[in-house]
Image (cartoon, rainbow, N blue to C red; front, side, top):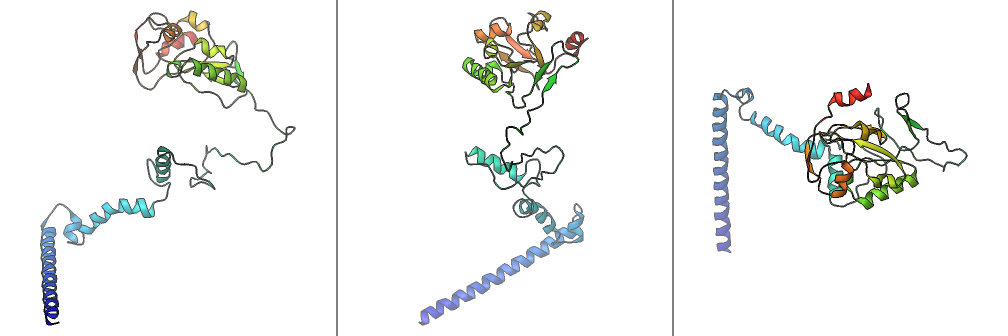
Length: 272
């Protein structure tokens, strides 16, 4: 028992000495920081509030993390808020990213699209057909009219394949919607399905270009033009597939440069 008591006493003495040593080190450190703060001239807060002024910068740094996890709402942060990041994380891990029972995003802002549930199925006699939309009315010789509002957007032939383009074209015909060709130009497989076709003319002018890469009136008159646009940035594409070469009207193994924009006079002269 005396041995245990002796060891306990020594331990308490050592702990007390260590505690006093640490307190002394802390006091000396505070004195050193105080002298350093009141003598420096770079930061006014540290000079006016020595020692405690340093906490301001620490709180400022830690505030970012406290706001993210404790105070900021799901839609507060920029450029991508927590709700958007969570959706991306879940989708990337192949986890269900749907959220039921409402939304944390305000739905009363101008331009918001809201799909409202119908409490009762619409009866056939009460259904109102979609109003038709006409493109080129008063401008084009043969305006294009469509009543579909869900359609197939532009996907270039080079990014798909013959079966894919055929399937999309035939499906568009059955659904009564139109199909955009994309910048890759118009191929026979777009037409084979019998759907309405939007012939998109990109800056490379595939299918309607001459040998010098200019817009060809003869080839332009052979098709129906409903849409024309440019691409965001230049890109160099090597057209290797013989079928694409024929559809685009390009020499074999030619490097094709997509300019950023289509020269304005090239279309302006034809519009006049």
